[in-house]
Image (cartoon, rainbow, N blue to C red; front, side):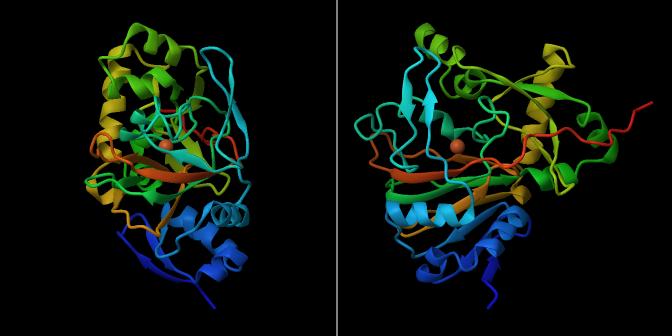
Length: 294
Ligand SMILES: [Fe+2]
């Protein structure tokens, strides 16, 4: 039987109705993956997955990341969650190694672009405790944002490359940081990616994130202005779905064709989300048939 799906907005996000036992059995995994890539984000309600069930769903959809990350500041190797499940919380008691970076989640970003040549394919999130106010997660469709640009603009963007860095990702969220904090962020590696990703499918998306530090082919002013212009374009209402969380929800997003952010919530909140990440499956590739602009 085909999956029952509802479009949550015209351009991004679908809700899927599927019984928990069917989801865990992976019986619709291929359809869910296709829908994820086609619609950018998927929401399934009333699942109440525990950590092992979350891992099971993740494994049915891709290659669950169970890994470690080397911290830039001191080279310390950190476990990325418990068997692939990372607790996303601003409370240092819940997650001492990550809480001090997660404030950056309030700015539009893709996961992993400053660290990896192959960024994660998808991310899954389910709440274990909600904030009293705010805390909605938003998703923006970077395929649709690119497809709507005028062709001359698309051609220009297809020739550009961008350096992604952790300071670029975090500084706008904490402009009053200390010199020591900034030095820790700056100790992480950076990556250069094409501004436009031509996926294996042939479709093209913007590789856009607050982590975009500099367009290498432009001077600093032109780079800054164009990045701001593109971010404003790509986060217009028609490209964005805002998810208001309920306990029991599962949200999955295609990290290769969307940006995401969390809306602010009260300080000291117990908000706790459990996250699984699916490893990337293709590197960010430049457009194969760039037209030379006369
Ligand atoms: Fe993220």
